[in-house]
Image (cartoon, rainbow, N blue to C red; front, top):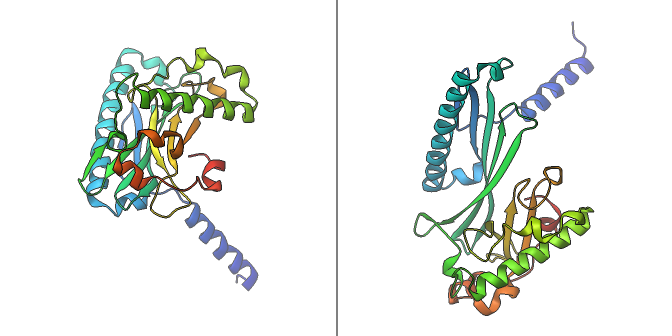
Length: 257
C-alpha cells in the first residue's frame, strides 16, 4: 500500500510532467528523411484568418523541406545513417498595435547533420482590418531605396547593433564588413516588427531581428536592433503618428525577442 507522502509525490510528478510536455504541433511531416513540425502559439489561434495564413505557409515549408530531404537522402544516403533531418518552425505573437497591426516572429530550427544546427528568424506584419500581410510602408511618407527614411533607419539600426555588441563584449565584429549586408532598403535592412510600448495600443518603435551569421559570428547568436519611433518622427505619415508613441518597456529590451 502506498502511503500518503508517496502518493502526493507521485501526483506532483505527474502534474509537473504534464506541464512540461511538449505542445502538439499544428502541422507535421515525418518520413525516413525528415521529421519537421510547425507550431502556432495560442494567441495567434484567436484570429482564425491569421492562423490559417500562417499554417498554409508552414505546410508549404514542410513540403519543400521534405522534398529536399528526400532528394538529399537519395543522392547521399551515408549522411542519413543516424537518422533524418530535424526541422521546426514556430510562429509567436510579438505585439498588437492599435488593435489592428499584429507583429509575429517566425523562428526556424534546421538540423541537417552538419557541423551544427542552423536557425533563422523572420517576421510577419498582419493587418487585422484588411485581413492580410503588409509592410511598414503605410507608416512612412516615403520608403524608397536610398531615400531619407531608409537612410535614417539603417543608420539607427547599425547604431543599435554596435551598442548591443559593446554590451555583449563582441565589439570585434562591430565592423562595417559585418554590417555591409544592411542597406537602406526595406528588402535589405532586416526583418522588422512593431515593438510594444509603455503606452497601451501604441508602438515604441521598430525592432529588427537578425539570425546567427547575419551581423555577427555564429557563436554570437541572434541580434535584435531597436529604433525608437521618435528617431523616425520626421518621416511618419498620419497613420504612423497615430500608432507610435511611448517608450520601450524595460522587459522587452532585456529579454530575447
